[in-house]
Length: 526
Image (cartoon, rainbow, N blue to C red; front, side, top):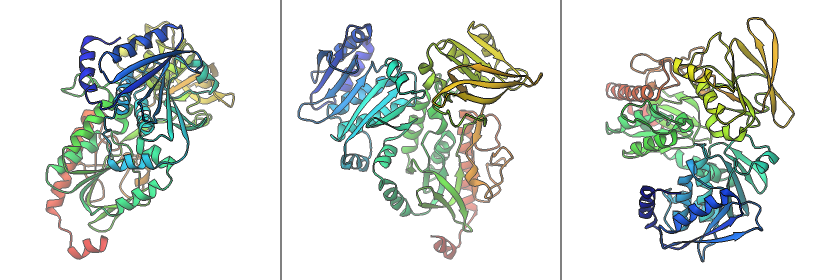
């Protein structure tokens, strides 16, 4: 299954193993089992540390394989063939099972090892999901480090009966001890916090000890990363507080328009952003949600959801945006039960089923094109009289035989049976007639909503919630700047956000060198 170039690359990686890895494969007579056997055989040829044994029957899932090491209590299993986005998860699991130290903070490792109890996790993923590897890799790591933690990563497309029995319509979906635990992207720190209720309080205590920053960037997407780099290069104390470093880029499948990078994927781009920021003396405070911005007359304070507060002489707001919701009856009730926002992640779960896409812009049309190759039929509904996507995308969409395009269509309700989506209702905006479409999934692609609710009453916002900025990125509050998708800057693009972040940072530095804070006033705020 692996070509010579990949084998050569992996052989180099596997030299980092310091203890043996035993792969126990559970196989049957299916073609997928033969495919998995071939993959594992290839891996075994690349390191003397790896051995493979096979067994048939007696297991709930096949094909599957477990990783362990003699003398270690490791409970880590893949059900399926982890290729696609999960191939990296497989390689990391092999390395970590083989004793290669994980690249996480020592405090995180200590927290994982300290968890007590019996935790049996199951994660359902799809091979096309760019959000799933973070969850799979986090739980795999926890299973390697703590014998109380078991983890099985399950390819939902391969075990469809299981997925349907549990009514899983969104990935990643995590079960703990047989009960639903979480859905969507999670970092290892988030999982630890959910298992260890004292973790959040300890994190807040650490943050309270932070000295005031010269520049505090709120948000870790492209704009925030650029702002942090430009500030740190000036030699001033810089911090980044982010709900999730990378922001919405983490949910982006393919990036092909960032100048000088012909093609990359969102998670890889986000990792590159973080790596670049860490090249400088920047304090990154990830997985922290800002709830309030206060002005103490020369010193600003950003309050966090966990109760901590951070102080700074200037603040750059780069909180980005999130998917806009339809706001119709049934949408909240059936979110992750047929209502989805990531066609790349959740599309494979609707293979052979009818679905709808809401939105006729580039995102909506691209989603419909992708889903048409997986599902039985796609109905695209656009509120306006015409689609707004690029002409080349529209031509491609109209060429597909299993796509219906409805314009002037206002979605009015999501229908369901109490457990999952069964259809939707829409109104023809020209005739006023109401129609119902039977389907199993609805993918919402109707634009973005800025993450600025927590700033209302603090800085000037437009009716759409965007932060009003001038041509230097300055907001209505002196000393507070903003950049990226949360602002009034037109054209929400990664390359534009990066430039805006740099501009806001340079403006913040200019503000600092032109503004002095009275010592008594600064001491009072501290």
